[in-house]
Image (tube, rainbow, N blue to C red; front, top):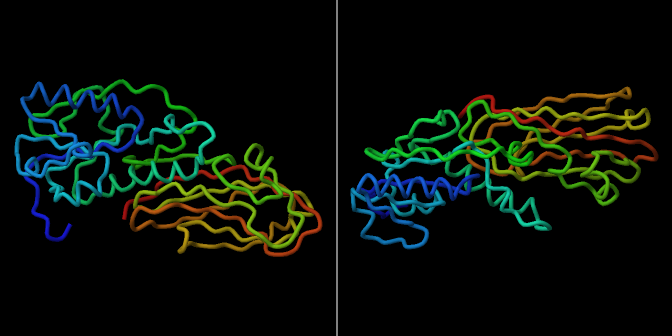
Length: 288
């Protein structure tokens, strides 16, 4: 942040990833064994610690590290297997809002310019050097849930995940069955049929392959697909022309961390027709 002197301490950014607490414990043990001082910056942001070269400052928030003058060359971002701690999401909570919050921290951490990122490529069973003289044994990683597996976007150049219908919000006519089956009744006025999931994407070019099925009446209707950010995105209009299953591919470049939004718009009034949304496969094509 402008006006803040560069910190001489070593920083570790550990966002709310799966196995977060196990990583914290492993870092604490390794720091003690190395004779260094571990300071939880989020709990006690001690200004003097910023200038202690023997200090390891641990934070969940990349923005907090930047505001405190963390030197990117003295900062390590730990993303582990690359998925947020979705198991911490309470039942009945607004999952989209919570996932936006959790993935925002991971995406911003990955985008911390100049910092070293420790991701799945580094998890080969051997200790990982997070700072000079600080070698941390990665904790065992439990098998991820389906939800966590399909949010494994961060710190992975080969990231490829699938977001099924349950990741998205459907229009009121289809709000009950849509998230469970992906099936939608098209009858009604022009409207957005589906939108979401507002998961924060790391910078890069991301390809999306959408799976859609139409019955015969639905295949005669004009649709628009949007893929990208919430205010800037790419669009494609089409009329299926025949019933059956289709895969439609689009890509979009995120220059900075921001939520992803996919939308299906039915562009005309419909008296009869059905559409089934089979989910979207999202994969990283390149960095930016």
